[in-house]
Image (cartoon, rainbow, N blue to C red):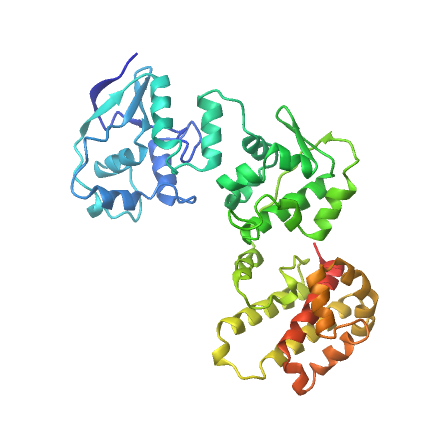
Length: 409
């Protein structure tokens, strides 16, 4: 079948449930699709914006692409416009939508009626490389409708759910530079057809994927930063997992990746762009409880201070030093020990986990196993030395590693 122009009543047109923009249950009604589009959790529909852009009237130069399934005309392309048309004529209802924003739309409109194959080709030509689809949308469409083999990106999503759990990973550079066969193999993962195999345990695999997701979210790796260096930017403990398991054999693994995008701590990571010194040497992922709550309060307090320095006196850094002592005491009390013993017991192991720059900072600020207790005690008194912010940040670096050891997830 070629293509032909046919006038069809909007009432008869049925919205496509397999629209790559936002697939939905095949049994869904037009109202279900319209509701999902109006809710627009993934910000892909923008119905009100489209209505405003259409201005006064419906433009016949943009014809919906329609395929007959039996006697039912299905809209393969033009679903957004058809939702607005159905809303205009009370065929669907959307609570809160200002219908005064809708243009004039006739009840019967011309449509480009064609075969399914032609419709699929037309849809892909218009949207495949336009940027309106995410990389995962595009890969899914290519596999499902163009019958191409699954991409590694799609296979990884189906095997772990990591992209849907962390939408910020649904980027071209992540697909092309991180989740590739080569990079996954370096990290201890391979595919046997569509099944994921790993040299790691389920827990270890989740740690690796969560670390990757957090580094992309924090923009530690981007199209301009650390390109091709995904393993290098992972946490030391994650790199050790990869290294220690290198000689292990591959085995099939079934995991569901966790989401890091909704965690408040992840949102803070964007602040690493600032030139201000980073407290705790980066974001900590601690077990829920008093220690985690105090840690987060200190980070928020410090970040607020960095943004509003002009509002505070020269003595404000001493409050951060006092807060670090309070955090240490809380961590020690929680495991029934003293602050001094808590620090002495874990200092050496924590220092080994620091990179060369962090260790240099400790030396420069005279933060050692023998001085850290005294430096924290200074914070409890009105000493001028407690106002030394650089030294306080250095203390937080080693303290952060100690907390990772004792309270890390």
